[in-house]
Image (cartoon, rainbow, N blue to C red; front, top):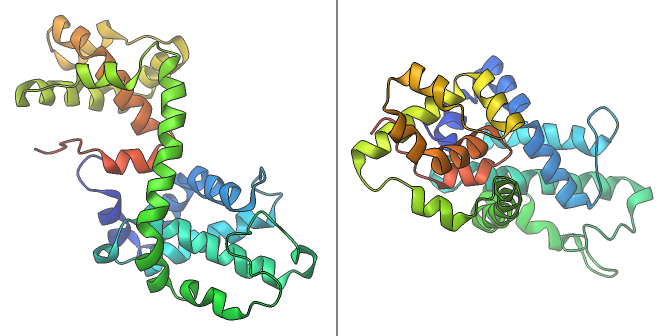
Length: 241
């Protein structure tokens, strides 16, 4: 989790069915969010055909992804969108949908409108950065709301971020320790406090260091265990440095 980027992971697992299936299962919340963003409606697995389309499109994105051409999440978002468009075009009952109006042609237009989303390569080269930026903005808003429950904001997190390498290593050690212990994650999220005593016992770090790390660790754990896929990739966590 800490030693390779998402893009590298996708390149590594694409030809390993078992790892790929686990990866797709892990990213089902991202797929659902991408489908909802395209369709403009709330969807449920096992009920909505659009999610089945999204799952197949995400699998397709994994198989076609080329790390040299951009970020995987932006590419996956574009492939999901393209496949949903194909699906709606084939379903006559959806001929007049408006929630895909940015991509559905108006009367009199031809299939040339779809030329730029026909191949996986075009989806990557034309949309990956735009999509990832838009997804990141949505995640930042969600993160802002979640941090507010802790009476934290981005400014407070920035101020608490470690400036020295030794301090950064200590903070990252705390984050790793918490994330690898699901009970600590549960305590942090459900009881809204940083379990300092348990961290001190497990890491052998000074209590003052742990207390000073509070805001940074809380934010990092929220990001790394929540539906913040784009933000997670954007941050240089420094794992392994």
